[in-house]
Image (cartoon, rainbow, N blue to C red; front, top):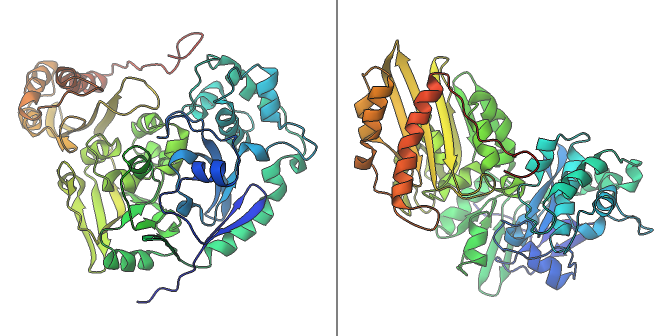
Length: 493
């Protein structure tokens, strides 16, 4: 099937429409803003989506609404911006130079010292200001998870957010609200124009407008790099300097961004972001409501996708262990059709998954949690927020009276793939669910895993933590609760 391509991407930058016909597939939004447009308020700090100095807002159409989200410009590729509205810190001030309420609050509350991180904080707070007129302290802190500051101690910045929330001039003053209807209409027109193909020297990029186009492109370019959120692929470029040609951008495929909830379970399209999935997953599986907010910062959760976390196959991906414990299935699609595999069987060995080059992850199905089932997921990391997992344990339990009828214990960070603790499960199945039996079984975990030592954790620490998480799950099943609080009195925990 021949695909009719356009030869340029189109988007809106602040108040100006942009059309680009020559785009290097690996060019980041940060580099383009600073080097091509000289919009230097957006800073480079870490170049890996951790520090937030590069934060901007990107508006996109979601189910007929124009939604603005904070993202990391350092790992956001230009090809992913088709039919989007990019807003940088330079756009916030009024025509007369008057500061936006968020900016003014940062001044009034002394929220800036060295100033390097300030534009990123302003943009994260601006995204919160747009979405929430009366944020709680916790909501402010969550919005700032992905922004690091080494000068102010955060308290003045939190106070600035609280002050800004109370200051809401007429909509005409706010640059986004003043042009929202016009931007919505224009982005809808751009999205309807179809797929894009751009050649840049020997490199190629595709921006796809439909799933059938994706099927055909992967059949023709099975070694292409599929990019949805780029929270992993971005680092391949900025840190590893890896070639990723040709690049296939799928973040505009709304057909892969659906969530379907039935009595049987939840089906999540592969293009659904963590932020989009949070509400549905937290309602169906409450433990997810605590796990997902610990995945990166808000910028990463706004970009990263559920399907991408699975397709990439990282042994420290946060979602696979939880989904494996719940018995999830992954649906793969190609020109030959679709097939479904158990998620735990999808991961074969480090760097290898049961997915052919011409296949892509289409959706994930998570069975409903039975009324009498217990489920928990716990993440161990050096920092509580915005840190990569050292160990993640996910636990599913069904009891018949006091006897274990079914148990699944899945871990990330303990092997070359996300993996179940089969020996421990076998030792517990059919036995009374008692602390004595749990302690005896958890000592067998070394037969299932031989974890490695790296800068995140030693092998001994990983094994000890993994064992203790089983005991924690048991104690929680008996009614004991012990939650690590987000913030200690007077500051960050």
